[in-house]
Length: 179
Image (cartoon, rainbow, N blue to C red; front, side):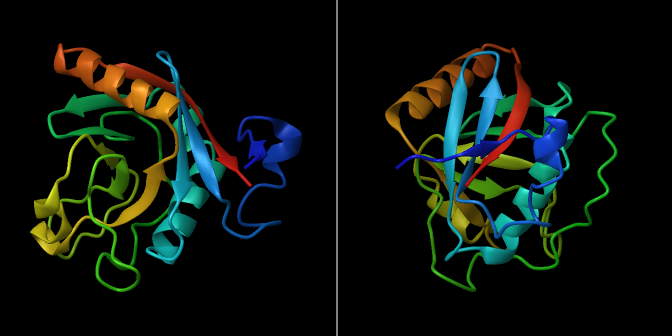
Protein backbone atom coordinates (compact mmCIF):
# COMPACT_ATOMS: atom_id res chain seq x y z
CA UNK A 1 0.00 0.00 0.00
CA UNK A 2 1.34 3.39 -0.97
CA UNK A 3 0.78 6.27 1.40
CA UNK A 4 1.29 9.97 1.02
CA UNK A 5 2.78 11.71 4.04
CA UNK A 6 2.13 15.32 4.94
CA UNK A 7 5.05 17.12 6.55
CA UNK A 8 3.76 19.30 9.38
CA UNK A 9 6.67 21.70 9.01
CA UNK A 10 6.22 22.27 5.27
CA UNK A 11 4.29 25.59 5.11
CA UNK A 12 2.10 24.75 2.13
CA UNK A 13 1.20 21.26 3.27
CA UNK A 14 0.63 22.39 6.84
CA UNK A 15 -2.37 24.39 5.65
CA UNK A 16 -4.01 21.20 4.40
CA UNK A 17 -3.29 18.79 7.24
CA UNK A 18 -5.78 17.29 9.67
CA UNK A 19 -8.46 18.29 10.57
CA UNK A 20 -9.23 21.10 8.14
CA UNK A 21 -9.14 19.32 4.78
CA UNK A 22 -9.17 15.55 5.37
CA UNK A 23 -10.53 12.76 7.49
CA UNK A 24 -8.28 11.03 10.00
CA UNK A 25 -5.15 9.86 8.14
CA UNK A 26 -4.20 6.21 7.67
CA UNK A 27 -1.12 6.52 9.86
CA UNK A 28 2.06 8.41 10.61
CA UNK A 29 5.85 8.18 10.56
CA UNK A 30 8.14 9.00 13.48
CA UNK A 31 11.53 10.10 12.15
CA UNK A 32 14.40 9.69 14.62
CA UNK A 33 18.17 10.01 14.51
CA UNK A 34 18.29 6.16 14.27
CA UNK A 35 15.66 5.67 11.56
CA UNK A 36 11.94 5.90 10.86
CA UNK A 37 9.00 4.07 12.41
CA UNK A 38 5.88 3.66 10.24
CA UNK A 39 2.65 3.27 12.21
CA UNK A 40 -0.89 2.54 11.08
CA UNK A 41 -3.81 4.14 12.94
CA UNK A 42 -6.40 1.70 14.35
CA UNK A 43 -9.47 3.87 13.85
CA UNK A 44 -11.96 1.07 14.60
CA UNK A 45 -10.37 0.59 18.01
CA UNK A 46 -9.93 4.22 19.00
CA UNK A 47 -11.53 6.83 16.70
CA UNK A 48 -11.29 9.75 19.16
CA UNK A 49 -7.74 8.84 20.15
CA UNK A 50 -6.54 8.56 16.53
CA UNK A 51 -8.13 11.94 15.74
CA UNK A 52 -6.49 13.41 18.87
CA UNK A 53 -3.02 12.12 17.91
CA UNK A 54 -3.50 13.28 14.29
CA UNK A 55 -4.32 16.75 15.62
CA UNK A 56 -1.22 16.74 17.84
CA UNK A 57 0.94 15.72 14.87
CA UNK A 58 -0.62 18.26 12.50
CA UNK A 59 0.26 21.11 14.88
CA UNK A 60 3.96 20.24 14.54
CA UNK A 61 4.38 19.72 18.31
CA UNK A 62 6.53 16.61 17.84
CA UNK A 63 8.63 18.16 15.06
CA UNK A 64 10.43 20.75 17.18
CA UNK A 65 13.51 18.58 17.81
CA UNK A 66 12.77 18.48 21.56
CA UNK A 67 10.80 15.24 21.74
CA UNK A 68 12.77 12.05 22.50
CA UNK A 69 12.31 8.39 23.24
CA UNK A 70 13.41 8.28 26.90
CA UNK A 71 12.05 5.11 28.49
CA UNK A 72 12.85 1.49 27.69
CA UNK A 73 11.80 -1.45 29.79
CA UNK A 74 8.77 -3.27 28.43
CA UNK A 75 7.88 -0.26 26.24
CA UNK A 76 9.67 2.66 24.57
CA UNK A 77 8.00 5.96 25.43
CA UNK A 78 8.00 9.33 23.73
CA UNK A 79 6.10 12.59 23.90
CA UNK A 80 6.38 16.14 25.16
CA UNK A 81 7.14 15.36 28.83
CA UNK A 82 10.24 17.23 29.96
CA UNK A 83 10.23 19.66 27.02
CA UNK A 84 9.32 23.33 27.00
CA UNK A 85 6.88 22.79 24.10
CA UNK A 86 3.52 24.39 24.87
CA UNK A 87 0.71 21.98 23.98
CA UNK A 88 -2.52 23.78 23.00
CA UNK A 89 -4.45 20.51 22.55
CA UNK A 90 -6.62 19.57 25.57
CA UNK A 91 -6.42 16.14 27.20
CA UNK A 92 -8.37 13.26 25.71
CA UNK A 93 -11.96 13.36 27.00
CA UNK A 94 -12.32 9.56 27.15
CA UNK A 95 -10.26 6.39 27.47
CA UNK A 96 -11.43 4.22 24.56
CA UNK A 97 -9.70 1.01 25.71
CA UNK A 98 -12.97 -0.91 26.20
CA UNK A 99 -15.36 1.10 24.00
CA UNK A 100 -14.71 -0.22 20.48
CA UNK A 101 -12.74 -3.04 18.81
CA UNK A 102 -10.52 -4.26 21.66
CA UNK A 103 -6.80 -4.28 20.80
CA UNK A 104 -4.27 -5.68 23.24
CA UNK A 105 -0.95 -4.05 24.14
CA UNK A 106 1.17 -6.63 22.33
CA UNK A 107 4.52 -6.14 20.58
CA UNK A 108 4.30 -3.22 18.16
CA UNK A 109 1.11 -1.73 19.62
CA UNK A 110 1.25 2.03 20.27
CA UNK A 111 -0.89 3.34 23.13
CA UNK A 112 -1.56 6.62 24.90
CA UNK A 113 0.23 6.93 28.24
CA UNK A 114 -1.65 8.38 31.19
CA UNK A 115 -1.17 8.65 34.93
CA UNK A 116 -4.25 7.25 36.62
CA UNK A 117 -8.02 7.15 36.36
CA UNK A 118 -9.63 9.54 35.39
CA UNK A 119 -6.64 10.82 33.37
CA UNK A 120 -7.03 9.74 29.72
CA UNK A 121 -3.70 11.04 28.42
CA UNK A 122 -2.60 13.69 25.97
CA UNK A 123 0.81 13.80 24.27
CA UNK A 124 2.72 10.87 25.84
CA UNK A 125 2.65 7.56 24.01
CA UNK A 126 4.53 4.29 23.97
CA UNK A 127 5.24 1.28 21.77
CA UNK A 128 5.10 -2.14 23.46
CA UNK A 129 8.27 -4.19 23.10
CA UNK A 130 6.50 -7.39 24.16
CA UNK A 131 3.01 -8.60 25.00
CA UNK A 132 1.92 -6.41 27.94
CA UNK A 133 -1.50 -7.81 28.79
CA UNK A 134 -1.52 -6.00 32.15
CA UNK A 135 -1.67 -2.66 30.27
CA UNK A 136 -5.06 -3.61 28.83
CA UNK A 137 -6.70 -3.10 32.24
CA UNK A 138 -4.28 -1.29 34.60
CA UNK A 139 -5.54 2.20 35.52
CA UNK A 140 -8.52 1.81 33.19
CA UNK A 141 -6.36 0.40 30.38
CA UNK A 142 -3.90 2.03 28.01
CA UNK A 143 -5.71 2.67 24.74
CA UNK A 144 -3.99 1.15 21.69
CA UNK A 145 -4.48 3.51 18.73
CA UNK A 146 -1.76 2.44 16.25
CA UNK A 147 0.49 -0.46 15.26
CA UNK A 148 4.06 -0.64 13.92
CA UNK A 149 3.67 -1.43 10.21
CA UNK A 150 6.74 -3.26 8.92
CA UNK A 151 9.96 -5.15 9.69
CA UNK A 152 12.16 -2.12 9.03
CA UNK A 153 10.17 -0.14 11.60
CA UNK A 154 10.45 -2.99 14.13
CA UNK A 155 14.24 -2.95 13.63
CA UNK A 156 14.26 0.78 14.48
CA UNK A 157 12.03 0.17 17.54
CA UNK A 158 14.42 -2.53 18.78
CA UNK A 159 17.47 -0.29 18.23
CA UNK A 160 15.79 2.59 20.09
CA UNK A 161 15.08 0.21 22.99
CA UNK A 162 18.75 -0.87 23.03
CA UNK A 163 20.07 2.72 23.02
CA UNK A 164 17.62 3.97 25.65
CA UNK A 165 18.21 0.94 27.88
CA UNK A 166 21.91 1.87 27.77
CA UNK A 167 20.93 5.17 29.45
CA UNK A 168 20.64 7.22 26.28
CA UNK A 169 17.83 9.03 24.53
CA UNK A 170 16.81 8.98 20.90
CA UNK A 171 15.80 12.28 19.31
CA UNK A 172 12.59 12.62 17.33
CA UNK A 173 13.20 15.05 14.49
CA UNK A 174 9.81 14.95 12.80
CA UNK A 175 6.45 13.21 12.90
CA UNK A 176 4.35 13.22 9.73
CA UNK A 177 0.84 12.08 8.87
CA UNK A 178 0.22 9.59 6.05
CA UNK A 179 -2.94 9.48 3.97
